Picture 1: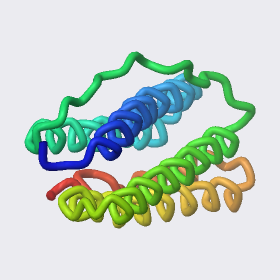
Picture 2: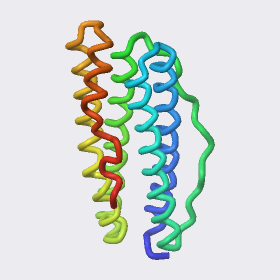
Picture 3: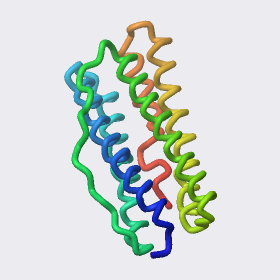
Picture 4: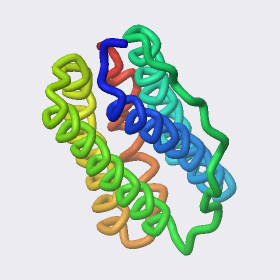
Length: 169
């Protein structure tokens, strides 16, 4: 096995987080679908796919380095939100948590002198900057719209940041 055992355990924990984020984004997409907001729903369905791809990056990396990934069950998800801003704030908070998790993985890789894992994780460091920026912008847009969700729908339609974004690595 190329990567250190402490990283294997931590990456398996991250797989749980990434698959959980994917499922949570489906729940948020369903919330927007139920409100007849197809652009916001589509945005979160795409986010779900992106998070699934992130989990799969960890799975494939671990397999390529001789480690065994553990595929988790789906965690308990939040399905009810008070408002569109609440749903997006929840997504932003989730991205902030994932950023902390990635940073902790990088710190562990450095502490363990695991250059292979550290190199792999740098893609995620960059990706999290994009994720937080996107969610922050969407949240600010919703707040500035003052309840005009059709305006937000138009904004999302005109700014498809995540259609294929960042996945070539």
